[in-house]
Length: 144
Image (cartoon, rainbow, N blue to C red):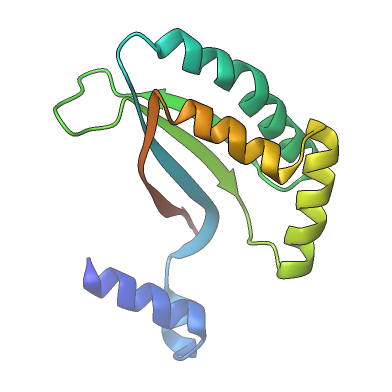
């Protein structure tokens, strides 16, 4: 795995033009995964949040071209300590600071909410759902 990461880094950095030319993969979307645990008896409450506010925001982000897609996955054979749900968001590139600020303003206006109101709502959900962590993955595609 470390060798693969080193080869990817070298290929992407341009440190070795020959290696970059021979490397059979090209970078694709980034994939952000949030690992969510929901307390017993609150599945419907959280599903309603996802179907409402979360979906509205994600659909808006897709329409703006900020993300390329999103999905919800559930852990059907959960073991102790594992998440119940995985919220997956795909995007092709990171926003620069100016883009982040513009996106935040546009998103808040679209959602008819302020950052403070969103924080308060998140705190309310924290009573029954826990964000256990996250991952940032990268998809790779065949060059040819």
